[in-house]
Length: 155
Image (cartoon, rainbow, N blue to C red; front, side, top):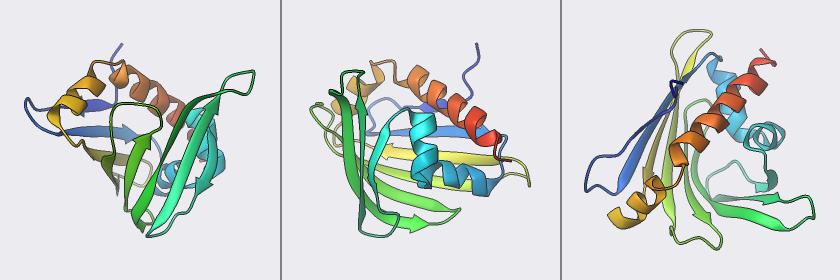
C-alpha cells in the first residue's frame, strides 16, 4: 500500500521533511491541527492544553483502558499564523528523543485540496536516526489517513 505521507531524511542530517497532500480545503486542514476536539479524534489522544498563540503551550496524553498514561508530550508554540504556519517544540515525556523543533506549513493547492509540510529538527543526527528506527512512517501515515477520513466529513 502506498503511503501518502512522505518522510525525507538525508544521511547525516539532524532533520526530517514530512509532506502530505489532503483532499481538504486549507481551512479544514489547519483546524485539524488547531482545534482540540479534532486533534483528539484523529490523533487518538487527549488534549490537556492547547494555547494557540505565540508563547502558548500544549500537552497531549494518551491513556490505556485502566487510565494509566501510556504517552504524553508537551511543548511551546512559538508562531501561530492561522491557515499558514505553526512553529512549536515537541518533547515526549519519558522518551530518549529530546526536544524537537517542528515547523508546520499549510498551503492551499486548490479550493478543495491542501498540503502540509513539516520540518522537524532534532538535537543530534543520532536522535533523528533513532526515531526513524521506530515504525514512525507507518504511524504518521495512519494518523494522517485518520485525519483525512474524520475531517473530510466536515466538508
